[in-house]
Length: 157
Image (cartoon, rainbow, N blue to C red; front, side, top):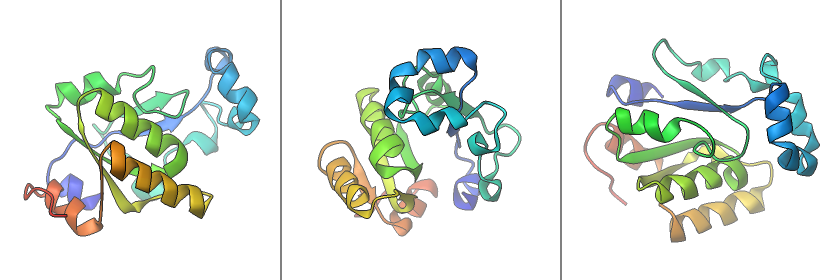
């Protein structure tokens, strides 16, 4: 986070949260994963972790489904910021990270996932998702490569 901020890169956060209308819209998703209903808009469970808390001017995109792009303004935000590449960090690798990687590619972005900045509750699903992302949707890179990208030096594999 510090490296991206120091380099003046656009940082956008996403969070899943539901108000009454969102609960109705995401009914099929919530039927599959009922625990998501705990992510009320004003709940502590839908807040960004305080260790990486957004600073003034860093947008938080509210989403109802796994992808940061689906049904949100993320694409417009990135285009307005002149972005052509998305570097993904977060959880869960087999859900939100993978879905966002697929949609980012489908929106025309170069996709990178920082291996050490993503996680999943299931180690097998985590590794399988990283393999799948790297094979089809983007590049899974290490921390040094992610830093190089953020600092303007490109990515070295």
